[in-house]
Image (cartoon, rainbow, N blue to C red):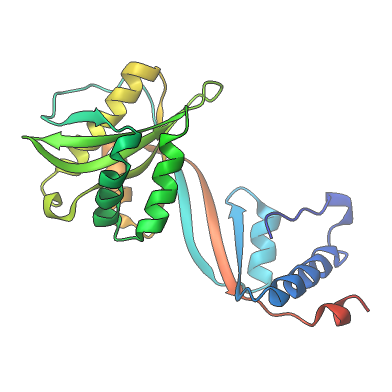
Length: 223
């Protein structure tokens, strides 16, 4: 279930509830076990519905932006762009940083390397690779987005993450002449604190709510 809308004139008539019953019947038939609701923090009607339905809150995702014009000082970190031949090296780097699966890392990185609008970089310090970060930019957009950013565990707690991100945002400001943007989970307190300390501002927030799929068989819903 990707999105559901009910026009204002038709709200409070049980239409959304009926749509949800049908959606859950389909999800249950497909063996899906949970239903995730994503709501913009500016949507009063959406937030009210979630509260009234007593759907448990899970986390908030913030979209943040760092404007150009930030004073830059050299960090001792250098960026080296990755290319297709480096995919296996970067899969290992991604897995070590994020403790995720190699299959998910491969999917993300191969998509990045085959895209004209995405680039991936390794962070080098004193001839050692300490982390990585990627940039997604689309010409009509006014922001270049950072994703897949992280520092290897053995280099954390030394201020190197902030230095690496400083280089990446300066690269964006210098080469793309755009603000740098990123998204962060509210539960990742360390990352959120880092971004705020660098001057990133919250542009928008999306709240995530989740509950188990509860449904009747589809034939009963259609009665």
